[in-house]
Image 1 (cartoon, rainbow, N blue to C red):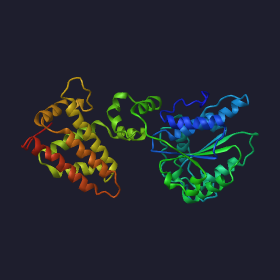
Image 2 (cartoon, one colour):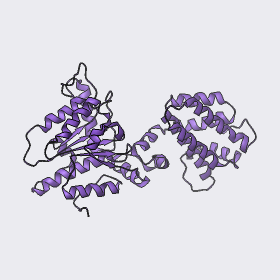
Image 3 (cartoon, rainbow, N blue to C red):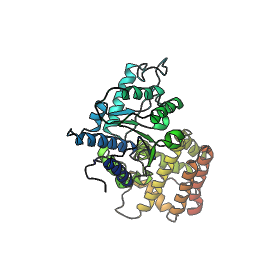
Image 4 (cartoon, rainbow, N blue to C red):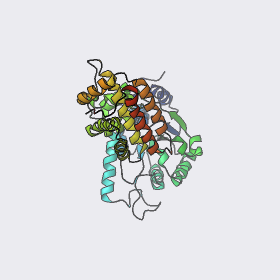
Length: 383
């Protein structure tokens, strides 16, 4: 059984992953390279941090040395953290990865790295950082070539490893073919198929599942200053991902909820062109924006049903008057049928190369059916 000395504090869910990693840690049989694969926002980066922290500190502990946290281990070079960086002006592959960047860019990178160390569930947001450059992999080689204490362990963590360009992947492969002693690589990725087969064959892949609503709540409470009431209604829409939930919250301003009311008003009064223009401008040809609109509509119709029973909490509670008018007018509406249609649109919008304009038109006319199926009248105002 895994030992009790392993510390997973701050890493939520993923019990099977923890169990497997504890076996590795307690057996001291650590693969040269691990790939943590799964959806964004399920804890892969946090797991990489905690595994590296445990691996190195357990080794220190066996020599009578103190346990160190992730920030200290990165600071002393025992953990090497690598991620996508922007390319500097006139930069070539022999330059240090930061050499040709401006002072402002370097300062932002330092701020983002510090934030990522403190909160492994956050995203690193650096303009122009679209690839992990070969320079960064060569810098890893340089650091690993430096003299270290006998038996000193080092962990190299490559975040979003699928962002490595081909030269970077080829350079990493050379290291994995002849890995330095006492060095472990951890690659985190949401797109494992973007990695070269030769890298995959030299690594152990650990698959991460999605999180439960309680586990996501644990992450939010631990790492983000968010009131539970501001996101609780969106938990069922999170798809088991902290990242997806935060994206939804980022959209969920009062203006967007007003958009739902305005959209329904246009549709139910037959102003279809106005409805299309509103949705088209909101979506900006981005399927993710359309998906979010569908999620808000799903919550609206859920709230319509909930509002029939007193004491139920509503996300659209501040729109009680238009909701009451809507509910009274369409009291025979089959919400399940309508929500099934919305789910179907979500599945279609998730596919690539979808014509968003056609989807928007279909959504508008599906909602317009509410009038003809459940009222038989037009000209109804809900606000």
